[in-house]
Image (cartoon, rainbow, N blue to C red; front, side):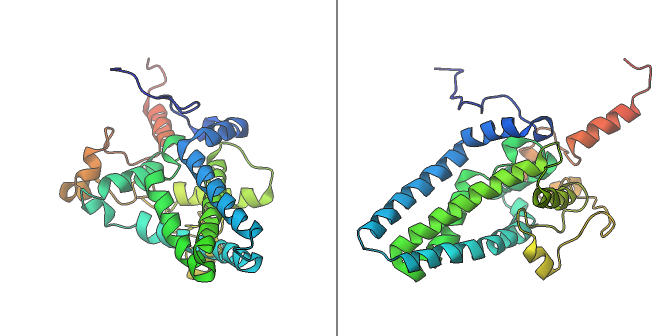
Length: 270
């Protein structure tokens, strides 16, 4: 019918901002998000197939365990490299074929970091990426059963990654010290300087490859932390993202814009 659309539980036409949510509200939203539901279905289906193979003797436990271990090891470096060299690249906005995808999967998130609807990775980009990163490794170790094992492991890791990424944007200080630490470094990536701290739940590769920084004292504030370098001058040559952004130019965080607007408003105005 005209004017109607599907509403998926928590996910309707309402906006959700993590700085105004608590952990309970986030958990409800998380498990009702379509991409998370899809990841869980994929992981469960793969696990069932692998379990049948193990129970019937068609697969051995040691190679399957090796597939899980290998996936756990490669996952952090794969996502570090993607975050640093793809999502923070300067080439995706240059083509109308990739500009919309880049806007959806990263520009919008940096422009509006606490908006839950643009925090989750897009299913059409994330799931194929996980598959490409995990299936060959699992297949090399244990054939197709190993490939499915690796895929299931990567998808579960993605679910964990997404949940802790959400927690980092909640407007409260987590009780768990490790979560407080990763939140601190991720908030620096979003609100101080985007050229570092690319790891979300694991910053080991940042430390190995020299992109880790502790906080504002270690690096100058970046003028492109909210637009990733896509500004008015860039848009003159590559207008594709700007055309897709109703509020263009969108160069600062909404919280900061509200504070600036309040500071600029005379006391007796309104």
